[in-house]
Amino acid sequence: MARAHYVMIGGFLGAGKTTAMLKLGQHVVAGERRVGLITNDQSSGLADTRVLGAAGFRVEEITGGCFCCRFGSLTEAAARLTENAAPEVFLAEPVGSCTDLKATVSYPLRRMYGDDYRVAPFSVMVDPARALRVLGVEDGRRFSAKVHYVYEKQLEEADFIVINKIDTVSAERVATLRAALEARYPRARIFEVSARTGRGLSAWFDTVLAMSDEGRSDLDIDYDDYAEGEALLGWLNCTARLEGEPFDGNAWLKNLASSIQTRLAESAIEIAHLKMTLTSPEAPDELAALNLARTDALPDASYRLQAPIGEGELIVNLRAEADPALLRDVVTASINQRPTDTAPRATIEHLEHFRRGRPVPTHRLALG
Image 1 (cartoon, rainbow, N blue to C red):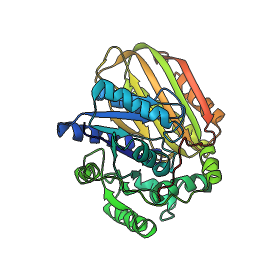
Image 2 (image 1 turned 90 degrees about the vertical axis):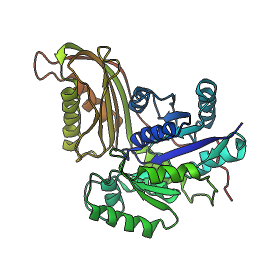
Image 3 (image 1 turned 90 degrees about the horizontal axis):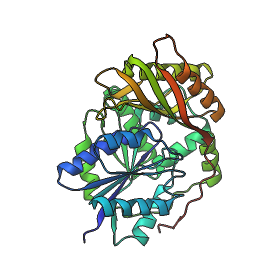
Image 4 (image 1 turned 135 degrees about the vertical axis):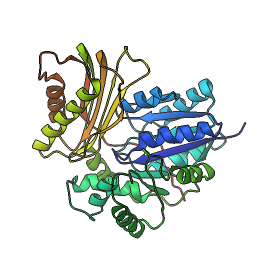
């Protein structure tokens, strides 16, 4: 039996990985090949899984740790997909705060499961507005130095750096970012795309699917600095039930994002990524989905409900450089606010807020 192609798409929180995964999955299916997707997070209740599942894909969700620290869960998820759908291409999205994935995931897959998988070069996506600030090209809200350390290590290990969201910034800013990336990371091949509009995707997808990872020297990384950078990020996953008179779910979701954004801005908190979905049994084939990639960014509504709903399930995934308890207070206050008597009532059914512990990879093998 032919080896399945394993494609991992990394990048910092808010870079647009899930939208790219969805488009790549559609690209694979259009080429008459079967595909399976694997999502990853530190906790359960993922907006990403909801979005990808709603698009009709077979999805396995790995929670409780990143691919590198849950390598066995990754291979088990692939085995389940193989049994249920026999994918010819696996698409995997690691946690957006992880790095050192070539040494801890790609190489172990090649070395230990080379008869089963052909591993693609590692792509790392960037949000151009965020990248221009991290690289010091433009001013604006920034994370602390240890968080930037993680971001920059992600870029350092990339085979392909993918500048996403080129539809949201000027061509001049894209060119400036490309020049800065080429100067700092000369080994990487750079692509310019918009996962939202589809611009530039075919060239990247065709290259990824045609090539195999050939490996290189280990990433020079200090795991103490890496762990400190990740520990500065607060994580919150929340699921809530909404009930009431029929209401506009799209507007409600936008107002919720605005409330969270405003409250965090007042505390000078930088958002890494806010992702929310709203589904309803009254519209089983639809969902509303909204993303916010920076505290000073505009919310991006990628999916919309077509009619008012009387009940729904809300999923909120928030990552920010902040005390998790503050994130809890902000999110719960925002969800529970009722500006009018006719606004839907919210019942929070699940909420986790935490900092990630030190990453302890299952395997970290020298690439040679």
